[in-house]
Image (cartoon, rainbow, N blue to C red; front, side, top):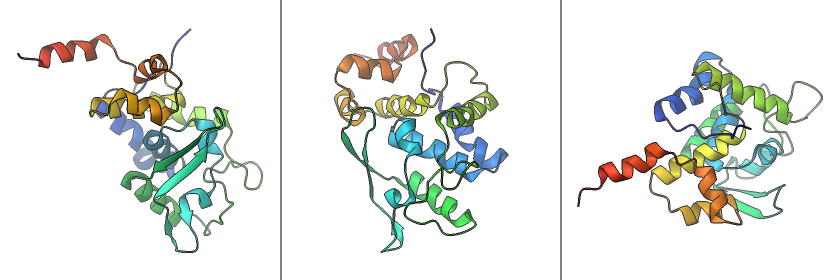
Length: 194
């Protein structure tokens, strides 16, 4: 059985992110990738989001934080919305044919009225972008969540904080999420000069 992996290579990650923006010109799919990469949310939680979860309609601006009750754990999580997310959703909102309402799905399906993308369709969106950059194996919707953790860890975020962000019950689960490979271990030894 294969295990979903994070996208480790920064150059491939950049190409992956930009596939729907530059090549396909599909802002909805681009926004899905950006939100997944920058929030560490599970795809089931992402697909249930409405515009009112990100946007303050009374003040006509994006919220500073997204608060989600995770479907899997039932735990509440508050996530700061960074400039990548806000910039992407500003563009996305501006390209909609009509201004969205609070209860409008962030990622609508083409089927039905105000129905979110299905999990299987979100998987196809992620797989298509992954294949476009040569990532053919072990990439799924969960790769977005794992990629967040891997790159946060690479940038020096303590694993205990990542464990808290992920709402994991054990450090072992977080270690698996980080996708630490021998190459990462080798770099530690190579960069230590005592």
